[in-house]
Amino acid sequence: MTAQDYPSAVFVDKSGIDMCLVGDSLAMVALGYDNTNRVTLDEMLHHCRAVARGSEHPFLVGDLPFGSYETSPSHALSSSIRMIREGHMEAVKLEGGVEMAETIHKITSVGIPVLGHVGLTPQRAAALGGFRVQGKTMEKAKKLIQDALAVQEAGAFAIVLEAVPEVVAKEITNSLKVPTIGIGAGAGCSGQVLVQLDMLGVYDKLMPKFCKLYAEVGKATVAGLEQYVQEVKNGSFPESGTHTYPMEKGEEEKFLKWINEEKTKTA
Image (cartoon, rainbow, N blue to C red; front, side):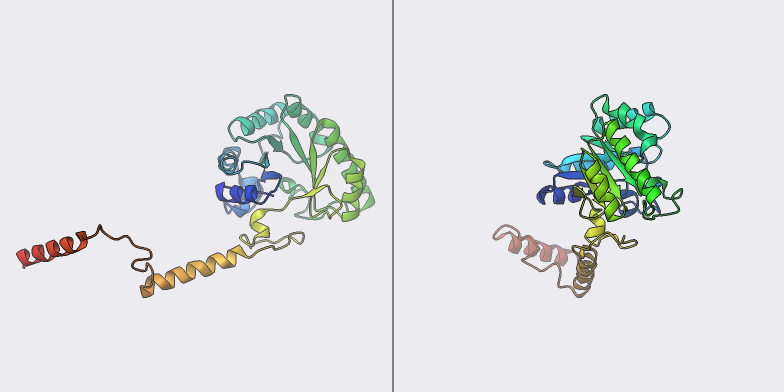
């Protein structure tokens, strides 16, 4: 499950979820950017630290954002070290297949765990023609298997499979020795991940087909705020005695008497 700040991390911690991803999806669902590529490494580190403070039990994975790892394996290692040291994460995630194998090997060679990500890679959505299902033809499915095997061989401890046909994801899972984490890839994966603000109905600008709505927190929040506005306007909140504080016994009478005396002096 993803988390993007302290409260969302506490929810993950209390839910018994074993892995928490600070995903670059927070660019859209938490920061309001139009795509995930807008978020910077410094912004990600800020959110990672907040999640780390609220999450005691899950294994913490920080997403390397676009521009923080692509130029060279050394660049990726530097960003990964920052994610661990400054972001207080325990592992990093990056997107890509065969072409990222050298980078993954570089990062894991110094003891930093890497979560791979193949299939639909949102950071490259423009090059893929948008947010589209990947691996729908035999040749493209074969390429996904090759990518997953290369990522595994490079040292990834697990691989996210996003927006991949169910049968393809199942075969990839069967072909690997490491676990797969599905998001829009069917129940045949080793585990599942969703964006928390999607599945709770908080972020409603875009609801992927693969996301199930488990709660409608967004609607409940708006309803609560509307009730608050109404009660403030009609004076029913704050309620005297329930939401207010009294003076010490006997002091209120003295205070009001003094107020009246002061008013009399100035009259």
